[in-house]
Length: 615
Image 1 (cartoon, rainbow, N blue to C red):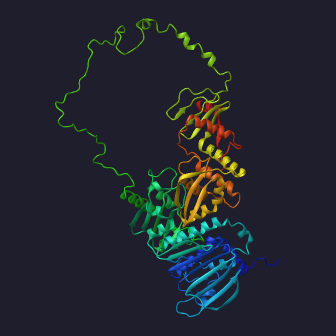
Image 2 (cartoon, rainbow, N blue to C red):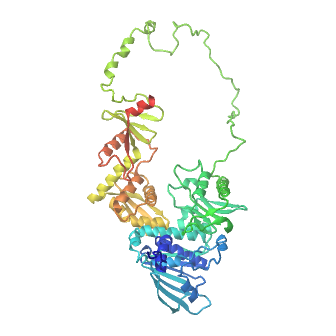
């Protein structure tokens, strides 16, 4: 039998490596920008077309490359960052694997222009699908200029599964945010389809956060700073009252490298314990300075997973540092031990004359054992009725008892008394509706007890109303007396622009003012919400947390997200009329059992379950 194992060609090996390193256009931007930072650039410009599908251009004013280095840079495992295995334990550069450029050249059409500062002539290299098409001397500016065209042109399956331009641009913006936050001393420019997204100058950390996330973020920042023998922690954390429901402004950096670390995130969350709104996540921008020998970044090709040698100790330091900063800025309520437990003693007013002691009135004739005497105000019944026997008419207490008994033992009797957590409502259509903990609606049915989730029920009602508006093309927009103007960060602004047409079909009148500013002139007539801005913010948070893409069935997904954003929240006390209207509208829906996201709206607890619990 002949040998069957053979060495793969470099082009195939590069495409396999590209599957791990280059996942989407944002991966290309990340690798090229990190190379520019390692080259010592002070200004990096990123130019995109069609969210990176057609063109990704990254230019810098770094050190540049010679003609030999320019050609070697596209070989696998060719790098200037490390030379020996021991260098892996002292890495301070962004890249070190030597796989990025080889992977990019394997799945795109790449053109490189580079020139060193002390040279008069630069080098141009054109590579497509790992094949070198041209290399020649050229005249170009100092530094390096990469043009990546037609990404995944030879991997159609990967290109097919790319998401919409808005979604891919959002990922690119997220990568730029991570790199720009870690390097505030470097100027960045991001241009998409000839529209400027970011124009960041050389600033400090606080100004860089303002430039990336808007003025609302910087107004709520609390500085963090601590220095120990293990780690130096610096940066900013957000105030609890401005925490959001989803992730978006949570950043960890170690030695200017972005990282994901769920264990450290838990330390921050525990530091905010008992001062955060329910299900909220605070914003934080924390920078760690650690000896490179005490961390391992060579875990994943994306280099966002990092292992620490003293992980538990650093966890405690993060928690203590965040708590200390919250306490210093009076975010955590302080305790005045001198006043704790003391009583407020009233001070007697001056010049009020003689102080009289309180008088106690005593009835010396009162005899508790004398039933014949009638005390004043104790009863309004005649004394003749009180002298009669107390048990004379006891049979009348049970006269109508037989009539009130249920004819079928399977029916559940209506509740006559309720606890402090359950509010008894008047009967509606022969049934009793009870709102439990301002979250659920309970009603007895023939087979048991029906439990309805009020928020999910309202989501289903609003979703079907929005879909009816879309299908009928009869949009009713209610104009605002005072239009709402608001600013968004670049990622949220692009996301909102991608659904403006769909929101218009639902009845929203939102105008783009440029520079990531928007104004709300009108809202859907069916939407009864006093703050349309809060609906838009909740809508964006829901769309960011959604794993699906908006490319297909966009209006249905926007309608579902808008229904979730506009539905009544848990904790809202419903009136009897509101409960009746909610139940009527829910059972008039085509699918009352499930919310637009597929979650269960109602369930029935059988009588046998209660009997089993009570044995």
